[in-house]
Length: 250
Image (tube, rainbow, N blue to C red; front, top):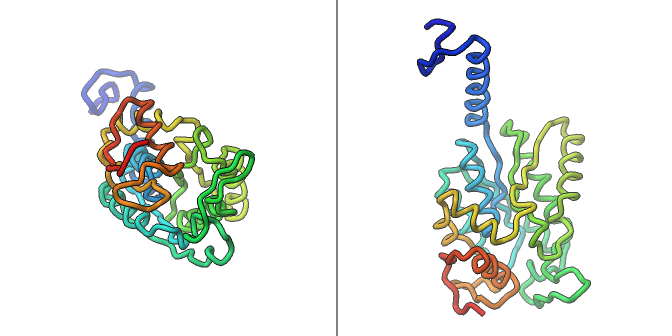
């Protein structure tokens, strides 16, 4: 093939051909790289998985069993990974139940959201530990990118969902491991409505059927807890129907 011909048969100058070849090399390198996706089984992590699947063909999903109230989260994660054609790993972190009295771990604790206070569902150090473990897995699998669905726009008052925390954690991980891992947070500045719209644009809205959001852990979802309220508001604001079933939508 002539230097003045591109791989698609169009007449191009040598410099243009170099740009085309360089772009293709970047594209194929990206597609062959492995992305780590933190998967909780919830709406946001499912959206992150869809975004990652649109950018990578090789995805490894990491889920955590930290003694959370509802094991249904783990089952939802498995189903979502299967839909994405990704490999799946559940890491046992159940020791966390002995380090926190969070209502997210202990079913005997009430779910409370009081003005000016952290929600009773906050688990101190959870996301710091999750990202550290994910980075250890990324190191072993020679991956340089981790996706997580944290968001500070509609977050529930959790300090470890803020951009400042993620940036700090990324820097700490790379210093500790001599790596150049990037923690991607594609939902960080999106509202719940914008997240729903993004999932719809990706053509993966049906994945939300497999997600779990409800703090009560019921199927159909209760529709009354703070998590359900936040989710339902996002769908209403997006003017898109939630494919998940609810007992009621108050």
